[in-house]
Image (cartoon, rainbow, N blue to C red; front, side, top):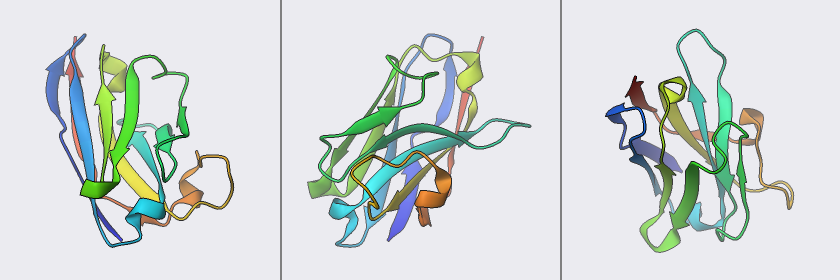
Length: 125
């Protein structure tokens, strides 16, 4: 599976962006997908994740209520809708995918074996 993340850019605080993670490979529709981010000088952190069907999602507390993860398996694409953006959301955002290892949507990077190249989101104050 190859992943390509896009949709990042520069936006003012309070604005919105939608990130996309497009995948190649017929098995993508059976994979869980997660979004992670790495801010300058900080460790990579979990943002959101979704199971293969879209019926189960998980969010970091920092983005809950502002970000929404969804997927369209017919298009082999997962989306991250980001609303009410804050300067602290500034980071490189990465999507990751892998076959699920449990019924609980994965939140840790080590549970994902396939990674996209990242897309930069900059939120100005």
